[in-house]
Image (tube, rainbow, N blue to C red; front, side, top):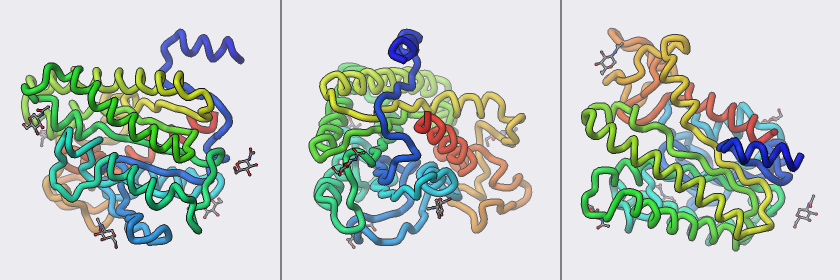
Length: 306
Ligand SMILES: *[C@@H]1O[C@H](CO)[C@@H](O)[C@H](O)[C@H]1NC(C)=O
Ligand SMILES: *[C@@H]1O[C@H](CO)[C@@H](O)[C@H](O)[C@H]1NC(C)=O
Ligand SMILES: *[C@@H]1O[C@H](CO)[C@@H](O)[C@H](O)[C@H]1NC(C)=O
Ligand SMILES: *[C@@H]1O[C@H](CO)[C@@H](O)[C@H](O)[C@H]1NC(C)=O
Ligand SMILES: *[C@@H]1O[C@H](CO)[C@@H](O)[C@H](O)[C@H]1NC(C)=O
């Protein structure tokens, strides 16, 4: 077993699994992130407040698929994500000031959930903390010329991010799921800006994701009692689907249909001359459809079950 893990490490496998918590024993799932993750749940409105289901995917998102379609043990989900979120608004300003950054989301966790109130009586050994952030941090900063280098700035971002992970740890979190930033260099938002923007963000994304996995490694090295710690790489899924768009039934992998960009009444609405909304990869300039979230959640549940 030890040598198998070692071998995986030597092969540079991006997915590192250790410890005991699996998806089947995860009773509480806390999610932090941006528009890819939020479902409109507002913890400030109460631990038991309803999930409005406001997603960016024109259907369920990966958290909802994970807690619904791929639930094994009726996992209780607390989704603290906020659309447009960055790690810290003071480092990378979000598109509007009301957006809750990771710093804000972790503050909410600390203030409301760390005390294990009624309805959220989680334990260190049955709870998974998922963080999917960086899309807007990289997206908003890859063109900055007021930083020494993007890589240097990513170091600042990582320090800030892991100061928040440390707060979760101090509050009792022991199992973590980190998701890499997907290839937003292939999103219409960036493609529309031309090849120079694409090549700049491609380099920035690679560096950010490398630093993320390195930061997770050093977090593990300095916190010896961690349980399940996974870095789930979203890139192979996005790239495989985009590279084989026709095979998987995506009518367009570089663009979207204007008529659908703010969402449609049904998950399969069709407005001529476009194909049904469910046949697209991108709902709008930056957000993939629920079909992609479903595949992501499926793969995550398998990874967490191994
Ligand atoms: C969340 O709920 C609080 C308390 O009810 C409210 O003040 C706040 O505006 C809500 N946030 C959002 C984004 O709706
Ligand atoms: C999770 O699965 C169980 C058993 O299959 C089911 O009873 C429950 O309703 C599911 N929960 C959600 C949130 O889908
Ligand atoms: C998990 O933690 C709870 C609360 O700390 C404890 O009562 C329980 O025995 C632990 N379960 C296992 C399997 O270690
Ligand atoms: C760089 O410039 C952007 C605006 O273009 C600003 O939001 C950001 O705070 C600046 N960053 C640094 C490190 O000065
Ligand atoms: C995909 O969308 C882009 C942008 O709208 C458009 O230029 C392109 O022709 C579309 N491709 C296909 C195969 O429809």
